[in-house]
Figure 1 (cartoon, helix red, strand yellow):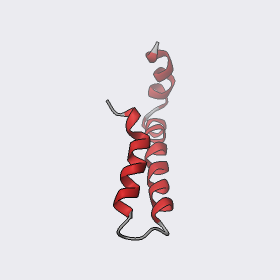
Figure 2 (figure 1 turned 120 degrees about the vertical axis):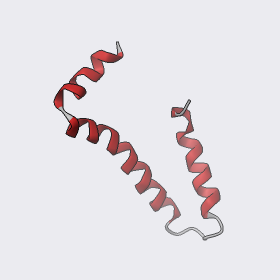
Figure 3 (figure 1 turned 180 degrees about the vertical axis):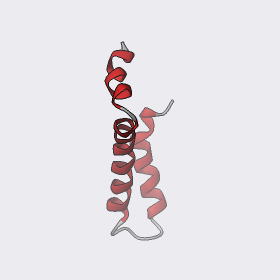
Length: 60
């Protein structure tokens, strides 16, 4: 079932695969910068840990 979804991505080439992988990475980076922009330097680590917990469900 999963291969049916991945086949169009894989057959289109490396550029499409790079976009599919790159979009979530860029989104997380922009989110981290945006959230910590006005935060105290002392609070940034705690804020980033809290945001990381939001994305932890994707990791095994």
